[in-house]
Amino acid sequence: MALIEIKAEPGLLKELIQVLQRIAAGIDRAYPPPPDPAVLRNMKPHGPDDIVEFRPEDEWLREEEAEARQS
Image (cartoon, rainbow, N blue to C red; front, side, top):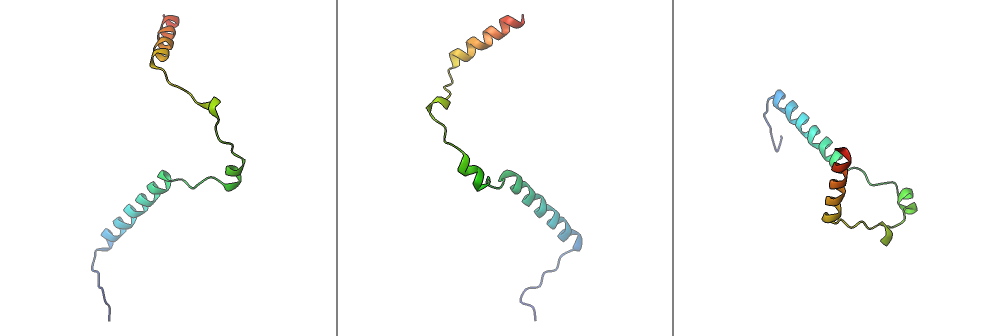
């Protein structure tokens, strides 16, 4: 005696399995495995010298100079 009986077409079940496999593959790509612990132990944190400050005015001047050099 079965508690649950599911009646479905084999073609629809096959499509469902393929869709679930594609979803699982997308999740695997979106969330890659964490890095190796040995690599993490050898990494050093960034210091204050690594900070990059974005200044729109400086970027605009660089773009203007690049355009002047190209023309």
